[in-house]
Image (cartoon, rainbow, N blue to C red):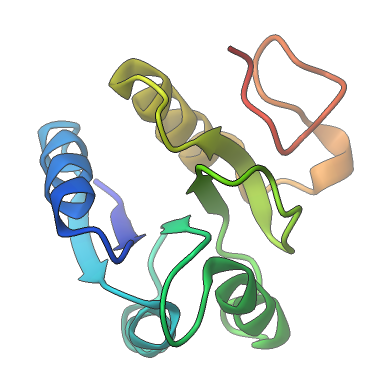
Length: 137
């Protein structure tokens, strides 16, 4: 079982993703913005962060930058999802469109937990060797 920090300002999506991840056997920490997520990451050192890009107070890109600057947090892999495209934030191992189906979300989480702490240059998501930050459709 892994501990996953789930970050989104949309409560319905947090509820849905929490349920999916709990059914996969993971422990979930929930945050509603990047500031809250950073505090939880410092306290709990999760195995994975799944974050939205656009959020109030501190967005997902700012959260990724803060995680990458903190020595004790910089190796935590990140899955980012957004309806606005891929911002190519530091630490993001997989980017998903916000409207992706749940099986693709599950695959992204499973892959990132398995391969996410490897150096970015040495691995790519299954079926896509061209972009380490995009899971294949």
